[in-house]
Image (tube, rainbow, N blue to C red; front, side, top):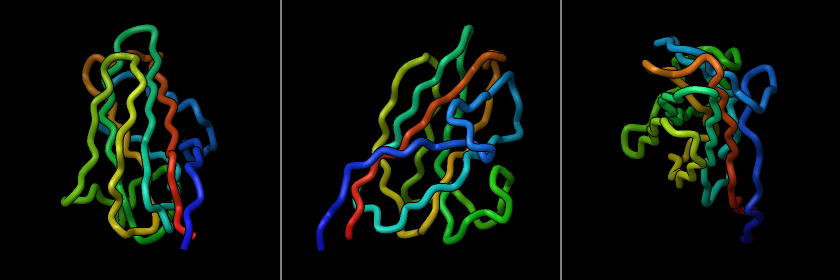
Length: 134
């Protein structure tokens, strides 16, 4: 067996937009489009927030054994892994790189929650870099 990568792919919203608009405050999460974690050996999540004001976004990585029934919507088969949760709060227009240790589940996605103080102009750009076994 060998490896390919690292390769980088954008994480998008269900409509395909790579600059994810996250305006204002809401307890209703926004979900990214699901992405494949099949054959992933090593992975890194890269996040960059931008805003004319303050950014306050909670980012969680959810995983599942299948794609969601409807991309961008809540799905009961997706959950934040209890043994290796990845939760980060972005508050400062800074590039972040987070090592992912995904469970052996085939798919992942981002769950984005806009917290108190988040500006209406807030956007998030996210990439998944991964090394895959072949």
